Image 1 (cartoon, rainbow, N blue to C red):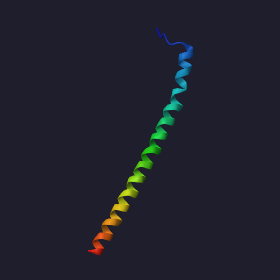
Image 2: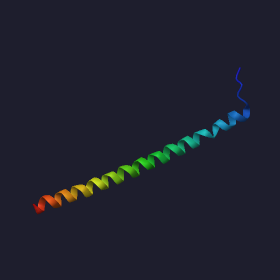
Image 3: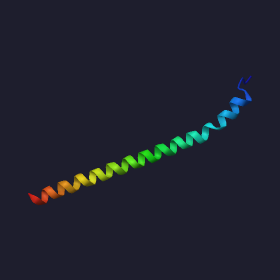
Image 4: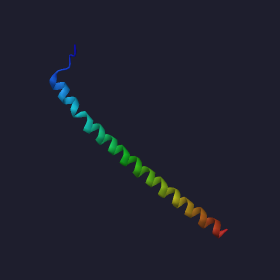
Length: 55
C-alpha cells in the first residue's frame, strides 16, 4: 500500500521545474567557465606569439 499522501504527491510535481532550473543554471555556469578558459588560453597564445616574434 502506498503511504504517500495526496499533499506529498502534489509537492513532488513541483520538483521537476526546480530540477530543470538547476540544470539550466549549471549549463550556463559551464558555458561561462568554458568561455573564460578559452579567452584565457587565447591571451596566453598571444603572449607566446609576441615573445616568439621578439626573439
